[in-house]
Image 1 (tube, helix red, strand yellow):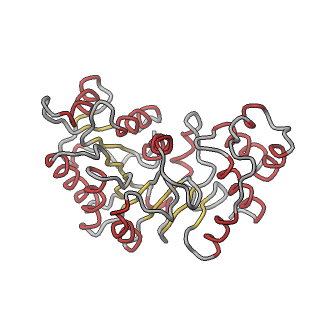
Image 2 (cartoon, helix red, strand yellow):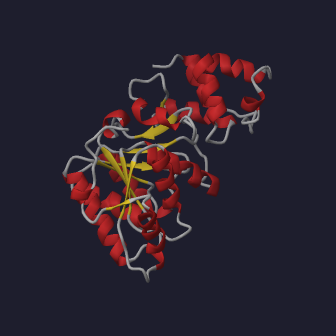
Length: 292
């Protein structure tokens, strides 16, 4: 467990920097968050660290209230529930300074056997059916289904995992106290009620933004041993998750689609270039082996 000063220091750093902030993370890992913050405030930290501070006057009052009233929990590297084995590989892409979570489940436990299923928001009926089948069968096998909580493929994967009485994690690009998209309020509540989690590196009240959706991709890739891309166009954010997973040495799978389908062009290209392995059923997904 972090001390009070460590907690406050990490809360400030989360507010003061836009993730990912690899230089700040490394500096805090070496010096500890309290001393790192002192050096940052006195401007004696390295230039690379100071350049990642974009909001030097950040306030943590809202975060402290959220902790006090039980709105959410903050996990830090000092916590036993920190998924260390998953996140240490993120050094080059940016390890989160801390993670906000809603729900009573253990993040370390839930991600010990987990698969990311993601894909197009404007998914086809084919993509929705495949995502639903994968989410359901993975959950039945005792695997935690991780996704981004968006419309389309993400939603189908989450809902089907819940339908199988399984557990699922939603990795958000906004504060865990906000619902995006707004129509998923009930879905997110059900995730929590069934032992899953809402997870974000963004402070309480932080709205979604394009840069945050992109930064979130590395967490979707890092928190699981394997990533499955169901549908993705050429510019789909799901391809960024696949790239991050590949860089981290995780297994990447793709569900092939019609060569005439716009929503399958990106995933078909992953398969053509060897960046992903074909998966047409849960039996094709290796989620048992540990992180490489």
